[in-house]
Length: 256
Length: 305
Ligand SMILES: Cc1cc2nc3c(=O)[nH]c(=O)nc-3n(C[C@H](O)[C@H](O)[C@H](O)COP(=O)(O)OP(=O)(O)OC[C@H]3O[C@@H](n4cnc5c(N)ncnc54)[C@H](O)[C@@H]3O)c2cc1C
Ligand SMILES: Nc1ncnc2c1ncn2[C@@H]1O[C@H](COP(=O)(O)O)[C@@H](O)[C@H]1O
Image (tube, rainbow over all chains, first blue to last red; front, top):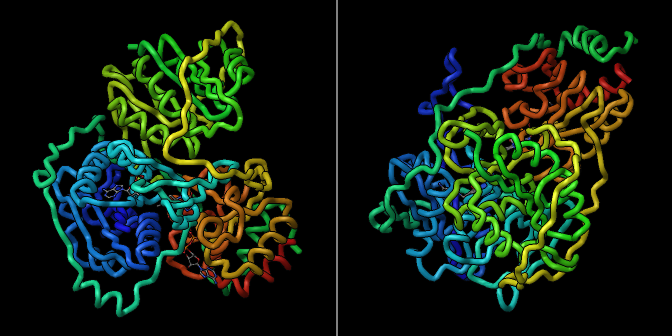
């Protein structure tokens, strides 16, 4: 089975710098792969484990060339990594991202299964998987909480609001998996050493014959939300008596 | 300028009152799509809107109805589509977006008319930043609470969509209701939230006892419900979980990342216990204690209960 797992490289918002006017600078933030995309890679790796091939696929700006990050992905049971790189793709919306991903999947040729994460760590639109499938004209399911290989495709479990569906999916297909489907592996030293030998391929938009994506909506600047100032009385363990007194006052319990 | 036409769709009848209210404020004409029974359609028509019903029996798999529904919506050429947030609806939205070329705005924080269409607010990184966008036309996924529900005024209409629903390549083998105990975290005055730092299922049980003794509810961070499965999913708080505003929120072993805090920022007081004095939660609390929960949980039960 030839599998593609889609992952997005995002800024680590924990390093976010907020200016007094609430505008934010993301450039100084580190890079990482979205947590939920690791579940997609893991799902692909498990399916590919007996004789399959797994390509990790990302589209983005220069940030997707980061070698440390690539090594991290390549140490997660994948056969190789493919990136579509263009500066415009850093801020691409779901529609444009899906257009480019669909073209890349087409170019990879002979793909049986595309796995997406539940949502990207920055947009969390939960849209790209559905839109890749629609563009490729492939069957699609989201919220996949279990995958089994069957004689003529896959049998999957889909956990929705209030109901669990069991479905037979013919291949090729596109699936978006839940974060509860699996626990992403922690790469071993051997995995990490092996990662350096795995192939990584970069394509440009021109390589795929895709035009520069035109944003479907005009987006304004990113700002930090207004945050509320709190008292912030933090006690060390040695002062736990003070802490307990204050807490009892808050919850309206008299001192014991 | 008000848009000409809005289409609304929700998986269950419950969400339409809010969607219809929002849509009527933004568009001259509101059409509600209902996929289900004639009874459901007339319940929605009570809101005073024109309903188009795709009538199906209960054994039909809802996803098989998307092609017919998308064809109907596309033909209406609405400037605005409002979809009630739900897991199944996200798959529909993506397909509709590719069919129409109209972008999807997932979980809009705000939605208003703008000179050139609509302005909508989205959060990024689960709440760390927010961004406003403008588009001439949009498919907005709307969660509960964005619009105040419309009161039923009657006078709506129901017309039936004349389309055949055929099964696609995916086959539904079986379905089972998801048994989840229902919980209303919103009404509790005290909520005890446990994060990964709680350490064990035994400690979760201790935290539950604490919550009970305080007359409150037990909640958690997402990894406790989604990865570890120590508590049901309807008990996690945050941008993708429940949003609460109790008198006191007591965070035990929660690091305090923005995606979680978004769910508890409305609390009157936030109290945190964490063994790491540099945990972000200490920058967002009213009262904090740097301590190991392993030792502190028995103390908590003893001193507070
Ligand atoms: C798009 C998106 C949406 C998300 N939505 C949500 C959401 O809705 N809700 C949510 O909660 N998360 C959400 N998350 C996940 C979120 O980013 C964090 O990963 C999560 O909230 C962290 O949970 P935690 O605090 O329990 O665990 P951790 O971050 O691992 O923190 C554990 C804490 O426990 C402390 N600790 C460890 N041992 C002890 C001990 N013995 N005693 C005391 N303290 C101890 C540690 O110091 C640490 O601070 C989302 C993420 C993304 C990307
Ligand atoms: N730029 C990208 N490159 C590769 N995959 C992506 C990209 N953006 C989103 N995805 C995939 O699509 C899923 C859903 O993303 P989103 O619709 O942004 O929430 C993610 O979990 C990834 O698997």
